[in-house]
Length: 250
Length: 323
Image (cartoon, rainbow over all chains, first blue to last red; front, side, top):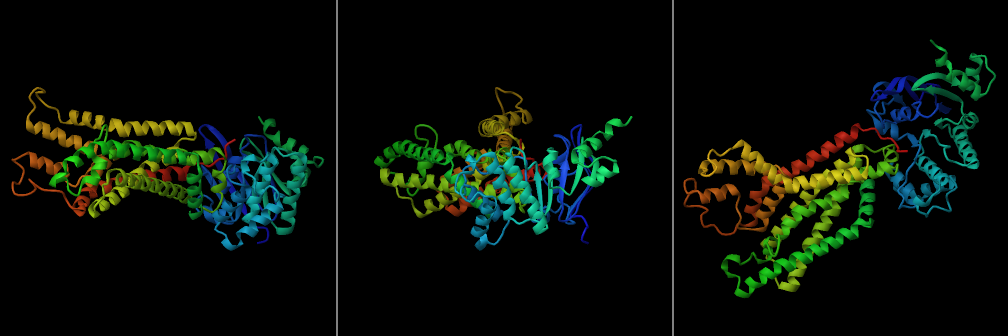
């Protein structure tokens, strides 16, 4: 039971017109781990994430999150999963605090605990000072922080983050990765993050999946993948090796 | 849904569009009272006479004045208010990246649409009420016209009918904001819909009726041929919500008006029953309400159809945060 996957995809496929975005993908993500979905732009990372969240309907295959099909039973999944999209948006006329309140209310959480939860989430991402400024005036880094606060406030069991480090300065990246590692270690949070920045991801992920053209090239702990291909350890070498597998074929 | 409703209401009332629409409402009220009032003053001076007793106030809405009667303004321009509130409500969220955020919270897609629709409808209801009350107030102050209880009842029903009618257009705007990703494309589509439904509907109905019920000798059409064509024309034109609203508003605001079926009976001695209805006076509110029940039902069905189509399309869309 301990290690039965919280997210499981079998034969997951999605195509847009003649373009196959996701092709027969099998994924399994275990509770409490930080899982990296790696691949270049256009490898199908975002399309996969959308199907895991029930925001897009798989053309074939199945998804199960906590045992629920996200398309058929979206609320059961969305209550327990927090999603930070690649370009997270806010109501630019509302303050950071008001944006957070709205997310809190959408989750139908206890109204009397709202203000404290908002305060805590703002403090956790270091936006206490800017809480009453318009979200429209926020820098990229502040937007990512506010986006994370919106995840924290609903206290999900799974974080799904699409390119969370994109556009952040090095300090911001360090801060975000530390926060995720900390949450995973202390609160048993499961994290699925997609990225094409290997060096950053390597510091925190437990297991990775390497995607190319919508297909899964490899899945597992970085060290195991390295050993299997008798490579020196290091995500970059592993990634390069598995990414080129397809090209060697006939 | 309540959270969405509350936020959207706040958005509507604090948006830059709101004062603009309010200014338009005020101008419309001013214009209709002063235009219709000019005509009414003449009648008032002569003494209204028995026939108009108790209907003077409503004449404000139906008197043609210098241009069109006030309720026709609402029929033609009211849709714009509904469309303006709806045309970018979903596409805006899509563009600013909040849609995927909202829909990754535990809320059904239908709930989001329902919240947006109800917030828009409430806003429109407030606007319509403000317009009617402004007209009432101005007519009290300028013309000294005091509405009777019957007229107030009719005014209230007219308000409800107008809200329903505007709700249809709001739903249409919402649908367009779901189908079209860009606000500009949606706005153009809404404009085209408005033009074609409001102004070309009657032309299309006329063409259809002409094609389906041709007249053999165009110089000397027979009475039966004309009647058949007229019948078809009315049926086709009543498919349009604009026409539905106009006819229903006519029943409400003019107590003496009858449905065209009855009028035709009156005009055609072969069909009419000489002992009833020939010299009928104004109808009580309840009777007028009976007349417009089919119109209310048809408008409601139109609005519900459009809204459900929106839900259907929206529930199958992929929600991707735009780059």
